Amino acid sequence: MGADLDAYFAEVEARFDTAEDFTVGLEEEFQILCPDTLELTSGFEELRDTAGPRLAERISGELIRSEIEVRTPRTAHFAEGARELLLNRDELFHLADVHGYALGATGTHPFSDWRDQEIIATPHYRVVEERLKYVAWRNNTWSVHVHIGIRGKDRAVAVCDGLREYLPHLLALSANSPFIDGVWTQLHSARTQTFVRMFPRCGVPDAFGDWAEHRRFYETLVETRCIEEFTQVWWSVRPHHRFGTVEVRICDAQTEPWQTLAVMALAVGLSADLSRAYDESRLPAPERGRTIEENLWRAIRFGLDGKLVDFAARRELPAADAIRRLVERAAPYGDDLGIAPHLADVERLLREGNGAQRQTRAHLAGASLKDVYCETVARARATSLRTPVKTQEGRS
Image 1: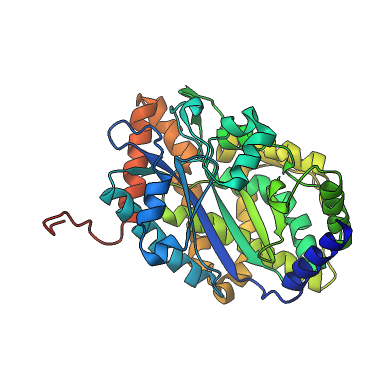
Image 2: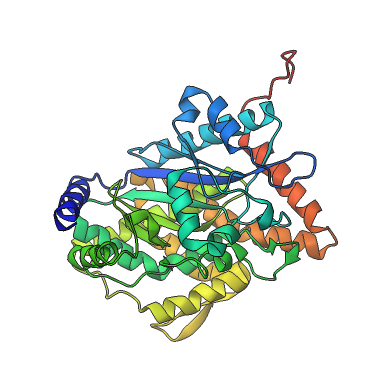
């Protein structure tokens, strides 16, 4: 075991030490739906097996057969990653149309029963189910992840440590799951409450300080049989061992592609700012976990309608104003990293309302949960398809 772990970490450390700064990989998760009822349906294998060559390389399964993930390749520039994400959406929604499925893009499904979902037939997820049982069965949630290249293993840990403080801000911005199990939860992110509060080794991690401490913890988890491999640690931000990236995992799935790119761009910009602070030896001490947890609960419960706490100043700020402060920090990197137009869309999200706010407004105006969800499904399709859908006769 010791020799195997040494060899494993030698490879992981080499990935971080040779990583290229601020490359990106963008991942989105979608619900697979029956178009007539909008219930979740087990269509993953059919979509995976019938995808064209380009899309097939980018599709992966998640925990349940009614979920599909599509990812971009690693790109050197966010603008390139954004183009790839738009192509992914276009191809995936076309593929779903051809095979008679609809796709949903919210953090939770508002009314499908988790007991009707089937675990995907892969060795990895069979192990997850065997270890977690009810916790795994209950986890019908959808999110977006962004991988950010950070050169240097200690530097990557420092960026993860710093990003912990801003996880509540990113969640408040991206909140898109007010409904689950046929209930208006009056939470803005029922996904986070369902996933982060139930899964082990999840949520806001401790600050590690350096790679050596991070490595010691993982070695202990493996040696004591807490985990079999690193992906069984589901923190909301983590150094990703296989890719040599910092992975941000806190955000709800977004209905429209511009929303996805806005929240991802902010995460990339903050990572660049923290990296510069580390290089200039001015990175502050990491925020304490107990204060981050206070803001995380506020983000789960109130989202953009609430306030976040500036603990250093001992005062509350409207969540939108706290997020605007982060945009100001990310803005200097906008042109170099290709995130500038997407940071502008952060302000659009704050102005127009995010998914949780839009869905809640419609429900309070009298729309049923199914009617609200139907509108989000239609909007996801309309904003994701970039070319007309062809019928068998070749007409749109």
